[in-house]
Image (spheres, rainbow, N blue to C red):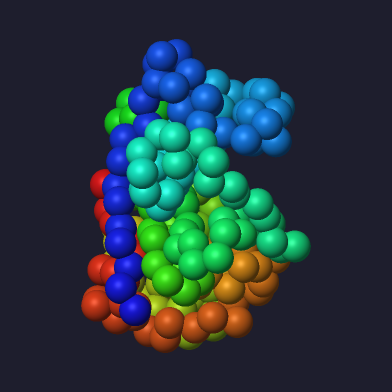
Length: 193
């Protein structure tokens, strides 16, 4: 299966937000209005606009008519026959800006994007997310590398759960990447900023 990947910046200026907002359905526009943080509104609007422009073909007129609905579990998709499957992740850490990561494929796909950063309460987070084998690998890693290893496992697990359509309603501990994630797999789904 071929997966197209697109990493894109998410600017926070009003003009870009308004251009993206025009491509959203009324339900998506209402969702944007409910989001309190301006960065969250921009991320939602720009992310959905990028999905439409990347998947619909035919530019802005086609993108405006490309519906996005949600499965029972909340995963977005386009119900049109033959429409590609997609998954979107966005993140930002303020000073470095915000970014989105889009994966497009013929079958269900999942993607996650996290900014490399220290993880507070790492032992507690690891207990909630990692399998026993993964936790042992994390504890065996040098302290300076533990947050990065945790984030690599987190993004892999979130991508798998998103592809399955469950998100973190599924148990991430049931997915076990073993002592160390395989480099080819992690490079396919993890992009480090």
